[in-house]
Image (tube, rainbow, N blue to C red; front, side, top):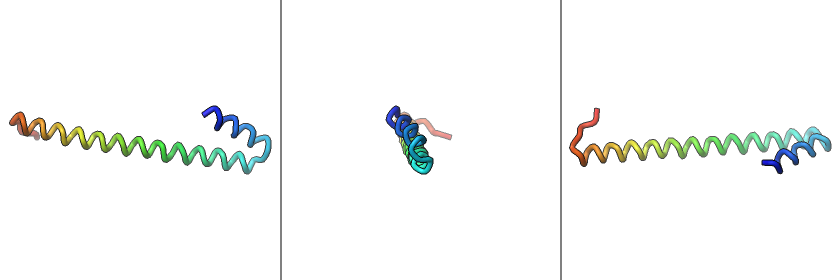
Length: 64
């Protein structure tokens, strides 16, 4: 993260086009990273529901 900030600061002094590219690349990185963690979270929730259903089935409890 400090490397990205230092690179962006240097790019601003060198060329605004380079600065825009660095900021855009960082924004894309954040977008895909957030999407990755959201997908992992959804998958974990689905596994939890399956486990709860199986546990209820083993215990003989009907789920609503």
